[in-house]
Figure 1 (cartoon, rainbow over the protein chains, first blue to last red):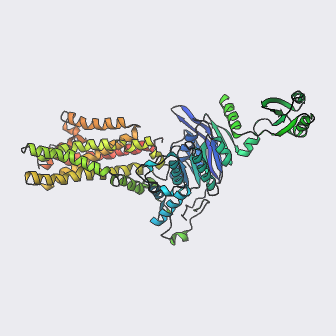
Figure 2 (cartoon, chains in turn brown, purple):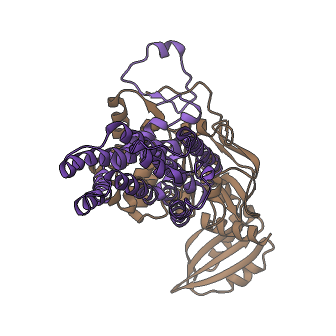
Figure 3 (cartoon, rainbow over the protein chains, first blue to last red):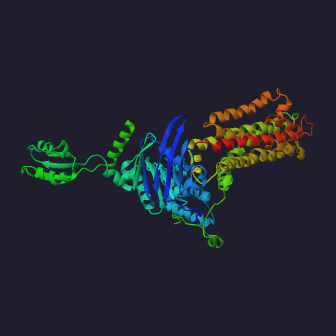
Length: 325
Length: 270
């Protein structure tokens, strides 16, 4: 076990206030107010060029803000940058290492930037990190021969070698094939109990699978920040899907006549028909919608339920809304 | 697992620290990360084929030219050939080799990676200055000097006067250091290798072409006069300026260029 410094880690692992960054007059990040609680897996979403990497570089002290402040693990990113990096692990979007070093040497070099102590203790930590990402068998091969997936896994290992209080991962699965993506997500889930993970991505399936909270950035502005479940639940007006077999004996017309129905969209699916019914009153809809369909005995209802919005729907809606402002 | 919670250091535990245990590096300030970075840089010099390539190139260029001249024209003074050819070619070698030391790391993203760790920016630059200084000093200064002594004995039957040549080698080392600090500093100001190499080589060549045209009071303050001074010193001749003035001026130049590099690199957006 390594000794940590005496200053406590803040409950909000990341807290920014009015964080802004401009490059030659072009605003890359605009007035970001973001709070990332401890022990969360926090997805930081946005289309390309939204300002995700800029934010990460500001948090790490690799660039300086034009205005505003940011604190990471309770320390100021401008004045206490080195102290912050002691507590943080970082994986770049396209991780780059010294090609002449092996994976083990890379981790040994990284570990020596954080720790002193017996060689055996360093080697144990290196071996543990290699094991975490399944690279033990390739540990003594030069990094120059590594595939994209292997580099990414080495990137996670080096980010974790100091057992950070905060892991910052910039697009950790972007360049990976489906197997590689699955592996990376598994590692992130494994780390959930041990650290806070803040990661940027535009792969929304991944976010839905592993994240507790998300923030969505568009054109440098934060347009949403909420727990994933809350974001999905609050998205758009309620609607229900009803799928049936048989003739449409005026069901659509009857539905349109109901005061609590706001829209009806019909889609043919071979012998089946699917109605997506937008409603103004969910309680009434749950009581009456299915009953209305079942009154016609020639119709067989094969499926009924509330429409489930995916994060992709929410993301697209929010980003388009944000872009039109 | 180490503390992902807010673990505090128990002073009693500090005094009974198990030597087999990891401890956080607590060195602060500009030296943070210097030793591991220096170890890594030296490993790049001496743990790869780089030193073999540099050694063979230095021997072929410097000692090769000297051997050819000594064999073809015995009246030519080998010390002049050695010092002149050696100082100019080693300066060019520094520029060609070190042009990507900083720029290359910025372009590849390894600088951003290393500086995302608890490492100070001065350490990043100083580790390069020290390791390249050791590498070039060994392979482009000491090795050719040792071989020059040997080839003088073999071809001319006598070794050059030791002390004057050592003094000349000191000026040669300073000459190398000026160009090394210059090329590393240029790497902090530019984001591609082209301007770094062009300006570095331009400065070396300008010394060759303009050095004689400028007043000696000006060239004394530059590295351009150092090859002539080294020649004169190696032959025990009088020199037109104070060597100490030239040495101090060039040391100040190294300091100024390095300070400018540190200032610029502290503001680098990675």
